[in-house]
Amino acid sequence: MLFRGWGKSVDGGWPEVATVVDHVGVPHLVVTRHALVRQLLTDPETFRPDNALDAVTPIPVAALRVLAGHRFRLPPTLANNSGPSHPEIRGIVADALHPTRVAAQQPWLTDLVRRRVARLAAALDAGQPVDLYAELAADLPLLVLARLVELPDAPVGAVKDFARAALELFWAPLDEDRQLALAAEVGRFHTVLRAFAATGGGLAARLRDAGHSPDVVVGALFFLLVAGQETTSQFLTLLLHRLTGEPAVRAGLRTGEIPVADVVEEGLRLEPPIVTWRRVAAVDTTLGGTAVAAGTSIVAWLARAGRDPEVVAAPGEFRPGQRGSRRHLTFGAGAHRCVGAQLARMEAAVVVAEAAPLLDGVTVVRPPWCPDNLTFRMPDAFVVRRA
Ligand code: HEM
Image 1 (cartoon, rainbow, N blue to C red):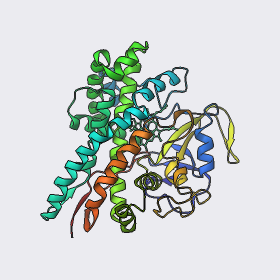
Image 2 (cartoon, protein in one colour):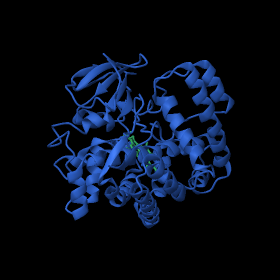
Image 3 (cartoon, rainbow, N blue to C red):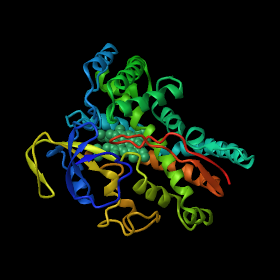
């Protein structure tokens, strides 16, 4: 079966385990049921995370040369690390993102979002269109992350461009010309990161002080700069878009009958920014009764698992607080479960609480467009105006 549209085709009659040849001709075993996705993610002896960051479209020699020219390397650090260094690196990152440190950022973020929302409300009142991705969601997670872990002093736009280039280079179907252009962009920023890793404070310093090599410090920062901000700005955009079509939910938020946290959780379940995640079989095994040979790439279809009727009462409907709403696997599961989950939830709660009223009475001028990508939704612009 040839397959496209991981973010779009989440409904429909999929088998529990299916072999899919994806858009670049690479075969994967796809797992759709909640119980099997959970089993896959939580058994690291049988199913390793080593392929988590492998390029979906094999990178041709010319683009590899460009990356090598920037001394680009991605050693196993976090998501793709099944080795003994993982718990310590994860522990250092988790300390930087500790719930108390995350909670301490909330007043600052609320103030910033409130000011932006006031400006956007004035623009809408004046009959102007506003882009809720560019003018609200895009940079917020990066600004918060920079305060939490100290990041290189690069302009926000450069970091966003690099992060989106990395998501495209590693997870999209691509031709060689595009791969070359993306390799140049990712390589250039990698050079910036390498310099920062050697001298920077905050998280970089803590990783260095723990004795990790420059490659490991760069690798961890590289992953965090992508996973720790691009995912959340995508989620904020997708959730705001979803809420424009959910007037009853917005009414419940207004009266306080529906808690913000429940809206965020149902949003994570129905509009995950990461629709799939990969593992690789370490040994010959079986999954849901299907034989799996060692070395098989397995795609956990997280978006689909969140709509499993075995788990959720009304799988396709946005019903905050419904049975099973919180049991989604949007943040993965097991030893590699997302360490930024608390931070992403806090950011989304602030944006929903402050920005949902903006959506009353607007029409969608341009819904977010999501390119073809195995894993990330990557919405671009989301434009609304008062009807
Ligand atoms: C809505 C936003 C986010 C989503 C949907 C998301 C989702 C995920 C998923 C699916 C994984 C892989 C889990 C697994 O292999 O089982 C992951 C790992 C990870 N995420 Fe997130 N994430 C989000 C936000 C963040 C943020 C804000 C940060 C940090 C600032 C972050 C940092 C990480 C790290 C470091 C890992 C690797 C953990 C490890 O391997 O030990 N993520 N995330």
